[in-house]
Length: 326
Ligand code: NCD
Image 1 (spheres, rainbow, N blue to C red):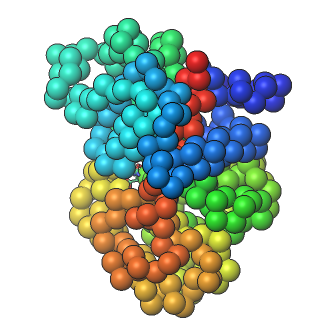
Image 2: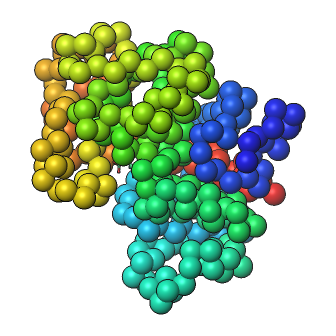
C-alpha cells in the first residue's frame, strides 16, 4: 500500500502496514523523522526519561511474532510499545510454543492474533510473509524481516541515524559491505536512500554475495548510483557512512561456503584510520560475528552499539504512535 501524496500528514501512517521501503516517499520519511525527533526529545529530557505524560499507546496491545531469532528488533519494539504506554503479547519462538507446531497456518494465526491485539510485528524466514499476512489481516502488520527480502524499520532507523548526524539525506555518499545478496537490511536501505537526490553507494562484497542482478536492475531504474568495488583500496575517503553487515549464515545451504566467505572483509581500526573521513558514521545493523574488530568500538564515529541501536527504539516509537494514533 503506497502512502498517497494527497494524504494529510496525520493520515500518512494511520492504520497502515509497513512492509517495504517501496511504500515510502520523501514526504512520509520526513514526517516520520520529525515525529522521531519529537519523541526522542520528550524521552531524553533531563529528569523525565520515562516521557510521562506522553502515552499515545495507552490501552493498545501489540503482538510481536518472531519466527526467527532477534535481540535488537524484538527488544526495541517491545520497549517502544511499553514506553508509549502500550502492552505486548510476545511470541519469540512460535515454531515451538504456538499452535503453529500443531500445523496452524500463518493466516489463521494472524486472524486469531487480530482478535486480541491492535497491530502485529512479524519476522519470518520466508520472503513475502509479511505482505501475505497483511492481505488477510484487518490490523496493521509491520515487517520485522522476511527472509532475505526486506527489513524496513531497520532501514528507517539507519536512515534516521544518518539524517540526525548530517541534517539531510540528499547528496549522500556511503559504503555498504558484506552479504549484499542475502542482507535484508541492505535491500531496504538501498530502496530507502534511492528516494533522495544524488545518492552514491559503493558496494563491496565477495563476488558470490553481490547484490542480485534483479536488485541492481531495479536500482538502475531509480536514480541511485551503485558502484561495485572489489577491494578496500577503492573506498573513497569522503563517505558519509560505512554500513558493514554480517554474512548471513542461515541462508547458506553449503556451510563450508559460509566458512570460506564469512570474514572476507573485516572492519579494523587500521582501515578506519586509512579510509574513513573525520565524520564518517561507522554503522552495522548487528549482530556482528567477527567482521568488526572490537578495537573500532571506542572510535567516536562508531554508532552501531550506541546511537544506531537506540534510534531503533525511537523510530519504532514514532511509527507506532502514527500508525495507532487514536
Ligand atoms: C539484522 C536482521 O535480522 O536482518 N539484524 C537486525 O534486525 N538488527 C541483520 C542480521 O541479522 O545480520
